[in-house]
Length: 378
Image (cartoon, rainbow, N blue to C red; front, side, top):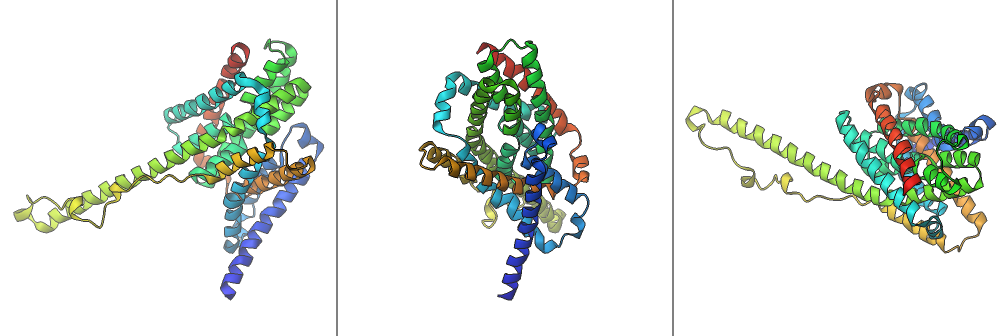
């Protein structure tokens, strides 16, 4: 009983550590400089976590680690669910069918292109998927949603988030400059669709939209939140893909074990009985991993995310309550980002190499060019 109490206490220590870092991230995010460049508490949180990982992490008691893991998993899922209170079904009607179609095309093509380019760049599949999903949907929040489904190593998630921060920040300054120059030839509504369907983070969309006027900002935010809804079907597809990958791994392991067993039997039998075939897998009922059915881990938090959107559409809660939920949700997501950052050292960035950033750059070029053509001519 005492031991269980100690374990709970140590877990709370880890959660408290992340909570303090998240409070600091919220405070720092209020500085004029960070507000000007639209750095959200989420981004500052992961930066603080990474700073800690590369300085004092070695002094962290191992008993606190479960609390940090709790923040990067359970609290992350709760944050994704509450993210649904930022959108209503009425918003979907407002933007029109063209904007919804453009969002669907952008999300689908960006993820598929990212998978193809990741394969050509010989990247590991998880990093390529995380980077692609972050570019395609809603930046860090999408990466976190995919992280909860794929369960990759923490540094892969941090690398993917870093690519989102870099190219999203560039866009936040580039888009207003292009719009004011008149080079794009887009009106306010078209520019709003272009901005909302191609910029990475919600914060980036808000920052860029605000710099281009109310018409662009309002349209851009709604179109962006429509992309957020598409996170649900994407997570379901990722869950199915992850289950298939797991089954393939089991089959490969079973084949290797069967081969080793067969060779061992031939060696033990000697030359006189070498012609006798080794026992087949069907002769050993205890080991049938290749016949296991694919088990899909359903990301239930994705459905609860949709339920939150539906509930918010009923307008049952006062605006002040919804605003509080959104602020609380931002804090939860900041905790998740900070926890991921604490497990990301610069050595792991070196391990990932430049390929994730090259992939993100190529996807960024596609978003700039492909998104523009869709907004202009569709």
